[in-house]
Image (cartoon, rainbow, N blue to C red):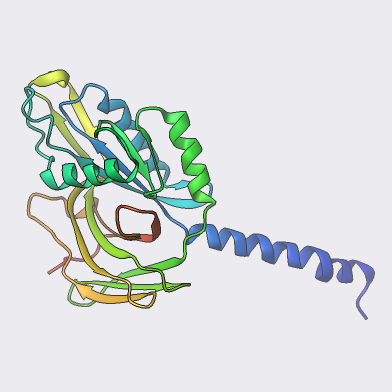
Length: 255
Protein backbone atom coordinates (compact mmCIF):
# COMPACT_ATOMS: atom_id res chain seq x y z
CA UNK A 1 0.00 0.00 0.00
CA UNK A 2 1.29 3.45 -0.91
CA UNK A 3 2.21 5.62 2.07
CA UNK A 4 1.46 9.31 2.45
CA UNK A 5 4.89 10.34 1.17
CA UNK A 6 4.40 8.26 -2.01
CA UNK A 7 1.04 9.87 -2.66
CA UNK A 8 2.56 13.30 -2.15
CA UNK A 9 5.26 12.54 -4.74
CA UNK A 10 2.78 11.27 -7.32
CA UNK A 11 0.28 14.06 -6.98
CA UNK A 12 2.52 17.03 -6.34
CA UNK A 13 6.21 16.45 -7.04
CA UNK A 14 6.00 14.30 -10.20
CA UNK A 15 3.71 16.69 -12.13
CA UNK A 16 6.00 19.58 -11.21
CA UNK A 17 9.04 17.69 -12.47
CA UNK A 18 7.30 16.77 -15.71
CA UNK A 19 6.22 20.35 -16.25
CA UNK A 20 9.74 21.63 -15.66
CA UNK A 21 11.14 19.05 -18.08
CA UNK A 22 8.56 19.98 -20.71
CA UNK A 23 9.39 23.66 -20.36
CA UNK A 24 13.11 22.97 -20.68
CA UNK A 25 12.56 20.87 -23.79
CA UNK A 26 10.33 23.56 -25.26
CA UNK A 27 12.99 26.21 -24.70
CA UNK A 28 15.65 24.08 -26.34
CA UNK A 29 13.44 23.82 -29.43
CA UNK A 30 13.08 27.58 -29.63
CA UNK A 31 16.33 28.99 -31.09
CA UNK A 32 16.83 32.74 -31.41
CA UNK A 33 18.29 34.17 -34.63
CA UNK A 34 20.59 37.15 -34.12
CA UNK A 35 21.67 39.06 -37.22
CA UNK A 36 24.45 41.64 -36.98
CA UNK A 37 24.97 44.05 -39.86
CA UNK A 38 28.57 45.13 -39.52
CA UNK A 39 31.71 46.20 -41.38
CA UNK A 40 35.45 46.09 -40.82
CA UNK A 41 35.51 49.71 -41.98
CA UNK A 42 33.25 50.93 -39.16
CA UNK A 43 34.94 52.01 -35.90
CA UNK A 44 31.75 51.38 -33.89
CA UNK A 45 31.46 47.79 -35.08
CA UNK A 46 34.25 45.90 -33.24
CA UNK A 47 32.39 46.04 -29.87
CA UNK A 48 29.30 44.61 -31.59
CA UNK A 49 31.43 41.90 -33.23
CA UNK A 50 32.78 41.07 -29.76
CA UNK A 51 29.25 40.75 -28.37
CA UNK A 52 28.33 38.44 -31.24
CA UNK A 53 31.37 36.26 -30.50
CA UNK A 54 30.48 36.18 -26.82
CA UNK A 55 26.96 35.03 -27.66
CA UNK A 56 28.39 32.32 -29.93
CA UNK A 57 30.64 31.08 -27.13
CA UNK A 58 27.79 31.08 -24.60
CA UNK A 59 25.56 29.20 -27.02
CA UNK A 60 22.26 29.79 -25.23
CA UNK A 61 20.15 32.53 -23.66
CA UNK A 62 17.58 31.56 -21.04
CA UNK A 63 17.66 27.97 -22.32
CA UNK A 64 17.27 28.84 -26.02
CA UNK A 65 20.02 28.28 -28.55
CA UNK A 66 21.49 31.46 -30.05
CA UNK A 67 22.07 31.33 -33.81
CA UNK A 68 24.34 34.17 -34.94
CA UNK A 69 24.63 35.66 -38.42
CA UNK A 70 27.38 38.20 -39.05
CA UNK A 71 26.38 39.97 -42.27
CA UNK A 72 29.08 42.35 -43.52
CA UNK A 73 27.67 45.17 -45.64
CA UNK A 74 29.59 46.75 -48.51
CA UNK A 75 28.76 50.47 -48.23
CA UNK A 76 31.83 51.13 -46.07
CA UNK A 77 34.20 49.75 -48.71
CA UNK A 78 34.95 53.09 -50.39
CA UNK A 79 36.12 54.71 -47.15
CA UNK A 80 39.65 53.37 -46.93
CA UNK A 81 39.20 49.63 -46.42
CA UNK A 82 37.50 46.85 -48.37
CA UNK A 83 35.92 44.27 -46.07
CA UNK A 84 36.69 40.85 -47.59
CA UNK A 85 33.50 39.39 -46.06
CA UNK A 86 31.22 42.12 -47.37
CA UNK A 87 28.47 41.57 -49.90
CA UNK A 88 25.92 43.71 -51.70
CA UNK A 89 23.39 40.99 -50.85
CA UNK A 90 23.73 41.78 -47.14
CA UNK A 91 23.39 45.50 -47.85
CA UNK A 92 20.18 44.73 -49.73
CA UNK A 93 18.90 42.55 -46.89
CA UNK A 94 19.57 45.30 -44.38
CA UNK A 95 17.76 47.81 -46.60
CA UNK A 96 14.76 45.48 -46.47
CA UNK A 97 14.84 45.65 -42.69
CA UNK A 98 15.10 49.45 -42.85
CA UNK A 99 11.84 49.48 -44.79
CA UNK A 100 10.24 46.92 -42.48
CA UNK A 101 11.11 48.89 -39.34
CA UNK A 102 10.35 52.24 -41.00
CA UNK A 103 13.89 53.57 -40.52
CA UNK A 104 15.24 56.58 -42.38
CA UNK A 105 18.34 54.65 -43.44
CA UNK A 106 20.53 51.64 -42.70
CA UNK A 107 23.31 51.89 -40.12
CA UNK A 108 26.08 49.85 -38.51
CA UNK A 109 26.35 48.13 -36.17
CA UNK A 110 22.73 47.01 -36.28
CA UNK A 111 21.34 43.88 -34.66
CA UNK A 112 18.05 42.32 -35.68
CA UNK A 113 16.72 39.67 -33.30
CA UNK A 114 14.30 37.08 -34.71
CA UNK A 115 13.29 39.58 -37.40
CA UNK A 116 11.13 41.11 -34.68
CA UNK A 117 13.18 43.93 -33.21
CA UNK A 118 16.19 45.99 -34.25
CA UNK A 119 18.68 47.87 -32.09
CA UNK A 120 22.21 49.24 -31.98
CA UNK A 121 24.45 46.19 -31.83
CA UNK A 122 27.17 47.44 -29.48
CA UNK A 123 24.97 47.92 -26.40
CA UNK A 124 25.30 44.60 -24.60
CA UNK A 125 22.71 45.15 -21.86
CA UNK A 126 20.01 46.14 -24.37
CA UNK A 127 20.93 43.19 -26.60
CA UNK A 128 20.61 40.77 -23.69
CA UNK A 129 17.23 42.18 -22.67
CA UNK A 130 15.89 41.58 -26.16
CA UNK A 131 17.46 38.11 -26.28
CA UNK A 132 15.70 37.17 -23.06
CA UNK A 133 12.36 38.31 -24.46
CA UNK A 134 12.93 36.39 -27.68
CA UNK A 135 13.97 33.24 -25.80
CA UNK A 136 10.59 33.14 -24.08
CA UNK A 137 8.57 33.74 -27.26
CA UNK A 138 7.40 30.47 -28.76
CA UNK A 139 7.80 29.85 -32.49
CA UNK A 140 5.30 27.80 -34.52
CA UNK A 141 7.77 26.08 -36.88
CA UNK A 142 10.01 23.18 -35.82
CA UNK A 143 13.11 22.85 -38.02
CA UNK A 144 15.07 19.59 -38.23
CA UNK A 145 18.47 19.27 -39.93
CA UNK A 146 20.72 16.30 -40.71
CA UNK A 147 23.44 15.25 -43.14
CA UNK A 148 22.67 12.33 -45.43
CA UNK A 149 25.16 9.66 -46.57
CA UNK A 150 26.20 11.76 -49.57
CA UNK A 151 26.97 14.84 -47.51
CA UNK A 152 23.83 16.72 -48.51
CA UNK A 153 21.72 18.65 -46.03
CA UNK A 154 18.28 17.29 -45.21
CA UNK A 155 15.83 19.96 -44.10
CA UNK A 156 12.43 19.17 -42.62
CA UNK A 157 10.06 21.79 -41.26
CA UNK A 158 6.70 21.28 -39.62
CA UNK A 159 4.62 24.23 -38.44
CA UNK A 160 1.77 24.15 -35.95
CA UNK A 161 -0.24 26.35 -38.29
CA UNK A 162 -0.39 26.98 -42.02
CA UNK A 163 1.24 30.39 -41.89
CA UNK A 164 3.28 31.50 -44.89
CA UNK A 165 7.03 31.69 -44.54
CA UNK A 166 10.14 31.69 -46.68
CA UNK A 167 12.91 29.22 -45.84
CA UNK A 168 16.47 30.54 -45.79
CA UNK A 169 19.81 28.75 -45.53
CA UNK A 170 22.89 30.50 -44.14
CA UNK A 171 26.40 29.04 -43.99
CA UNK A 172 28.47 30.69 -41.27
CA UNK A 173 32.10 30.45 -40.25
CA UNK A 174 33.67 31.07 -36.85
CA UNK A 175 37.27 31.78 -35.90
CA UNK A 176 38.06 34.42 -38.53
CA UNK A 177 40.31 37.43 -38.09
CA UNK A 178 41.62 40.30 -40.20
CA UNK A 179 44.48 42.74 -39.75
CA UNK A 180 42.87 45.91 -41.08
CA UNK A 181 45.16 47.98 -43.26
CA UNK A 182 43.18 51.19 -43.60
CA UNK A 183 40.02 53.12 -42.83
CA UNK A 184 38.61 53.78 -39.36
CA UNK A 185 40.00 50.51 -37.94
CA UNK A 186 43.38 50.72 -39.64
CA UNK A 187 46.09 48.87 -37.69
CA UNK A 188 43.65 46.79 -35.65
CA UNK A 189 43.19 43.03 -35.65
CA UNK A 190 39.47 42.25 -35.78
CA UNK A 191 38.07 38.86 -34.75
CA UNK A 192 34.79 37.54 -36.10
CA UNK A 193 32.32 34.76 -35.31
CA UNK A 194 29.34 33.60 -37.33
CA UNK A 195 30.45 35.32 -40.53
CA UNK A 196 27.86 34.56 -43.19
CA UNK A 197 29.60 32.99 -46.16
CA UNK A 198 26.41 32.19 -48.07
CA UNK A 199 22.78 33.18 -47.57
CA UNK A 200 19.99 32.12 -49.87
CA UNK A 201 16.29 31.38 -49.98
CA UNK A 202 15.69 27.67 -50.56
CA UNK A 203 11.89 27.56 -50.67
CA UNK A 204 8.77 28.32 -48.70
CA UNK A 205 6.32 26.60 -46.38
CA UNK A 206 3.42 24.88 -48.06
CA UNK A 207 0.51 24.18 -45.72
CA UNK A 208 2.94 24.61 -42.85
CA UNK A 209 5.48 22.08 -44.15
CA UNK A 210 8.78 21.99 -46.04
CA UNK A 211 11.12 19.12 -46.91
CA UNK A 212 14.22 19.26 -49.08
CA UNK A 213 17.61 17.61 -49.53
CA UNK A 214 20.14 20.03 -50.93
CA UNK A 215 23.77 20.86 -51.40
CA UNK A 216 25.15 23.15 -48.72
CA UNK A 217 27.85 25.52 -49.94
CA UNK A 218 31.48 24.90 -49.14
CA UNK A 219 34.81 26.29 -50.34
CA UNK A 220 38.48 25.35 -49.99
CA UNK A 221 39.00 28.76 -48.34
CA UNK A 222 36.57 27.93 -45.52
CA UNK A 223 37.62 25.84 -42.52
CA UNK A 224 35.28 22.85 -42.37
CA UNK A 225 35.44 22.52 -38.59
CA UNK A 226 34.27 26.13 -38.13
CA UNK A 227 31.25 25.99 -40.47
CA UNK A 228 27.58 25.75 -39.54
CA UNK A 229 24.42 25.44 -41.59
CA UNK A 230 21.60 27.56 -40.21
CA UNK A 231 18.08 27.21 -41.58
CA UNK A 232 15.32 29.57 -40.53
CA UNK A 233 11.76 30.36 -41.53
CA UNK A 234 10.79 34.00 -41.86
CA UNK A 235 7.55 35.77 -42.63
CA UNK A 236 7.56 37.51 -46.02
CA UNK A 237 8.74 41.10 -46.10
CA UNK A 238 11.55 40.65 -43.56
CA UNK A 239 9.07 39.71 -40.85
CA UNK A 240 9.33 37.60 -37.71
CA UNK A 241 11.40 34.42 -37.61
CA UNK A 242 8.99 31.50 -37.17
CA UNK A 243 11.52 28.75 -36.45
CA UNK A 244 15.21 27.89 -36.84
CA UNK A 245 17.89 25.26 -36.33
CA UNK A 246 21.63 24.85 -36.90
CA UNK A 247 24.00 21.98 -37.66
CA UNK A 248 27.78 21.92 -37.73
CA UNK A 249 29.79 20.66 -40.70
CA UNK A 250 32.09 18.66 -38.44
CA UNK A 251 32.27 14.98 -39.43
CA UNK A 252 30.79 15.46 -42.88
CA UNK A 253 32.03 16.68 -46.24
CA UNK A 254 29.19 18.33 -48.20
CA UNK A 255 29.31 17.36 -51.88
